[in-house]
Amino acid sequence: MSKVSAIVIVKDGENLIKDCINSVSFCDEVVVIDAGSHDKTLDIAKNMGAKVYILESDNFSTLRNFGLEKATGEWVFYIDVDERVTPSLRDEIKNQISNLK
Image (cartoon, rainbow, N blue to C red; front, side, top):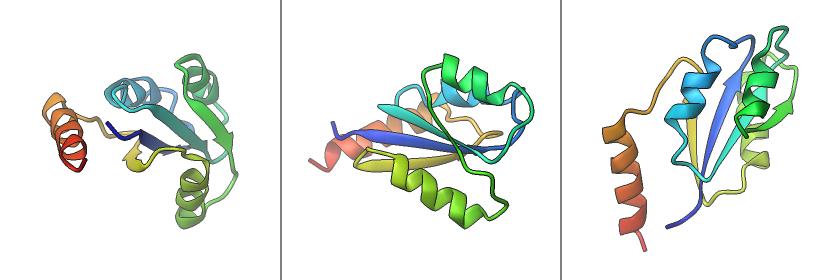
């Protein structure tokens, strides 16, 4: 299967980041773009094995593009920190990617 990168853009999301990262654990890498958190978001993400980068910006497009630059997967999945991937969505994503070979 092709490599999938999940990209999470976050600022001060310590109460949300753990569940978000857990929901994309099927991805080959999780890239967290932190827009200047002042809470424990960075520590939580790092401890969960995410690749964490800091870019203090209020420009969503800049943050998104920075995440894309850091991702190494052939496929990129953007997810907001307050969103979760359901098991059925996870299975559909994996199925669709494996059918493209």
